[in-house]
Structures are given as structure tokens and as C-alpha cells.
Length: 308
Image (spheres, rainbow, N blue to C red):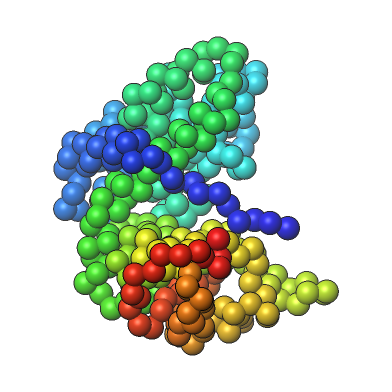
């Protein structure tokens, strides 16, 4: 079984700038730059967007609502890839959010759907496809999802603000855990942001919950791997699929406990040189977050990666 997810946030530099400019403008309109966590309700008000009442996301109620919109839901409304967590109705300027998920997840969902509403191309195309029998092409839908993710990410972490705050704290997995509360973000999103924006070489392995299989023992599938540019420059981007008792990170994985402290491991860089590293982890129940980083600062390395 392979669960390693494709990059859900990559955009070309030009596309990224357009989306971040929209998100920056939204932060200004909501006067939200200096308020923590991000005032999601004020963001929605600035976007002229409303959240449907709680009852609308009851399974029976939402199905009834969808039937009033279309016979074929897939042809009419944008929805999450696997489970409906958020729905954007362009015609009514309203969003439906699954309020059974944790508040930090709801915050991201609301900002994601706001992105669809605030990005002019999204709003126009969603309105068009919700009023006809055609479907959005998979490539376009994927591009829109990545754009909305970046819109939400920029607002949630206020551009570079999260990275700047992280730099003022001691390096380690406890820092994104602390900042998650400050920014109103999930541990999952905060740890990803911590790795991708860090000036230090580091990577975070986001694992699915631990499984205990009769023939294989304990193991955890890798959901995502996020790394800093410095880490990728020196080691390449890892593509591990599963962490088990034979994997070099195994001793750092918390089995039967919530957290592990920095554990020595060794990894090879692009030039074949071995580096002493540390790995520490936290089990959120939903995912296991493993932070990996070299003990010593890297020197510039440009060669072929053993992990690519």
C-alpha cells in the first residue's frame, strides 16, 4: 500500500506570486496582520462570504441541499477529493464546512474555500460549472486546489511571519507545536510550514498512525515529506514509503508513547558523505510527525542525490 501524497501546494513562481498577492490584499482588507490567531470571521466578512448554518452539514441536510442544486453533485459543486469537508457555492456566496473536524482544521478549510471565492478565475469558473452540465478537467481542478491551498496557507501563517517567529525559538519539534496554538493552525500544517520555511537543513516525515501487522510487525506509512531548501540542496528530497523496524528513523518513532526526544541517526548526503543527525517525533493521534536534521551545518553540496 502506497500513501505518499503528491505535492498539494506547488505552484510556478508566477502563479504563486499572483495567489500570494491576493492573500496579502485579503489580510489588509481584514486588518488581520497583527492579530493572532488569524481572525477567520473577519477574513470571511472582508470576502463577503458566509458560512452555512451548522445544521446544513448534517448528512441528511447536506444531501437535501445538494439535490436542490443538481441531480449530479460532481457536475455542480466543488468538493474535497475523498471526503466532503468543505463546499463552495459560488452562486450563493456561501460555504459549507464540516464542523465535526477540529477547529484548526475548520480554520484552514474556511480559508481554502475563501480562496476559491476571492480568486476571480475560480469564482467565475465555479459559477459557470455549477450552472451547466460540464465538469472541471482534472488538471484544472488540481491547479485550483493548489492555488486555494496556497491562499489559505499564506493567510493562516501571515506570509513569512510564522518563519520569523520560529527563528526566535529554540530549534526542535516543540517549536511548531507552540506556534500552532498562536497561529490557530493544526500541528500537521504547522510542522509542514516549519520545515519548508526553515533556514536550517531539516525535513519532516508525516506518517499515518502506527499499524501492527501479523507478517510485518509495527510500521507506519509515510503520508508526506516536507523539507527545507537547505536540506534538499544537501540530501535531496526523501521518498520513503513506509517506516518500519528496519528503517533508520525507527528508533525515533514514538511507539506506545506520545513523543520521543532527539535520537541520533546517520544519513548520507548527495556526495556520499555520512552526517550525524538527530530525529525527534510527536504522535498527534491523527499523524506521527518526525523531524530530522543534521547536527552540524551543511557546506554547499551539488551532486546526485542517493534519495532522488
